[in-house]
Image (cartoon, rainbow, N blue to C red; front, side, top):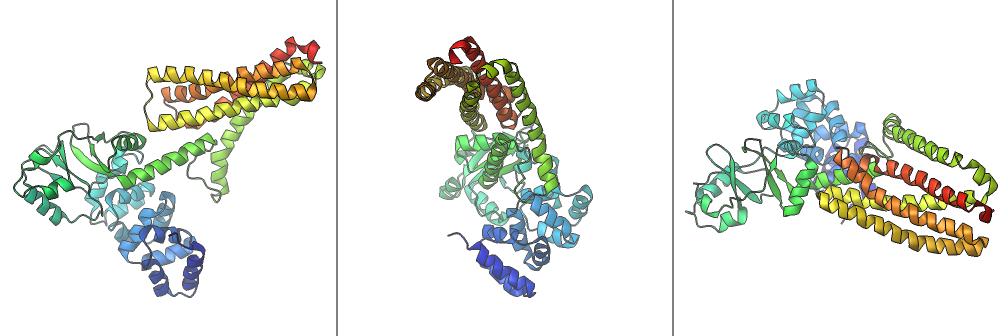
Length: 449
């Protein structure tokens, strides 16, 4: 059941205005962790800075773990260093590393000097945030092949992990190289004297520490894993990525793709973002759109005399470009989604390109026939109807193919397919639509006038 956020927020803010921190803390204490963070995020900056240090350090840590990274870093930077150090000590190592990575170098060094578990966090800081190393946690237990099931359970009991969910236990050899995985169920059901090597699965699916987080998510989704080990180039086990981290990645990547398809380069933007940040994230793409729109206008200018002789052409040219753009945008969305969730081989790419070209022609025939018939009933000119119908077939066919070619091409050169696909495809379909429609119209100009 979702919270009545507005009512709870009003009560919480009322308690804070009265400096009744005990009541405010009790309101948060009865909520689950994510609900605490959601309510806390609705408070003003001053209210957050005032309330957070008065909470139990473990509760403060839970809240910071569930807040968005920019909000967490901003809040942490505003608190006394001793206070934030005590809170970070209660955080999961991977979440703590994410927070420290968003702070200034001076703040990070000062905090590391005060942390009790700094050695667990330092190794995580060397990896980029969007890599497997940036996602993983260093808090894991590694078993040995010659341990017994009883010894493994005892080791797990002594470790007493903070994580609520443990699905797999990974096995390393004497050199600490990953060599197997044991499910918690297998360990519990095994007889006490059973050796780990007899119940472990030596075929372990793992990821390299430097690969992109999107590839991690793809691997875990493909093999339906709840956790995946991270290894260095030498095969040594260095960390573990759990499913909750991957859920965050999927949300982040989906948001990023949606924003980029809408020509927003910064996935952290929202309607309440500072005006300067919104300008930086949105204005460059509007400039690019302006350039491509002017190119389309230049194409039209080459047929200015034809349009002057048959003004009716100006009425219908947007139909051709609009439908071509719509068809291409559908394919861009499908192509970006496919590239984000799976690898597309060369053979598959050729099949997709050809299939979408045929699909575009069929869509063009279907749409073009309806539009041509409607325009004939409206204007009574068979040649105008024929030009419009043929232009739609051609532009939808080419636009549909471009909607796949552009994302595939961008990925091939190492550019995010979502980043510029919509801009490039829209510019291409508009220009092609104007060119095709007006070129055909020029051949039938006497009959259209």
